[in-house]
Length: 78
Image 1 (cartoon, rainbow, N blue to C red):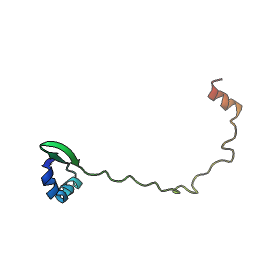
Image 2: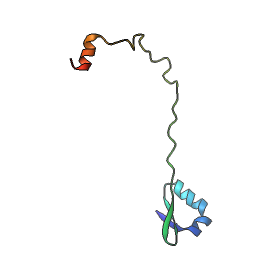
Image 3: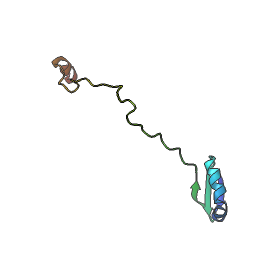
Image 4: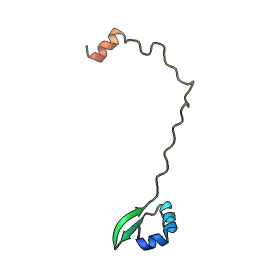
């Protein structure tokens, strides 16, 4: 991790950004104390594609019908 003072960072910003994009963090300091870090951004997450499974899934017509008494008793611990 490279450390540069704020004056050098101003004059070499483009180069420091290129270093950060390559994966090397750069710490910017003022009066010998670190104040900022230039780092690589995480790649964007994959975007969700809606409709990929359209027509491949089906829901039974009685999906939300009440459960049979014996199955319901099993869930209720009877």
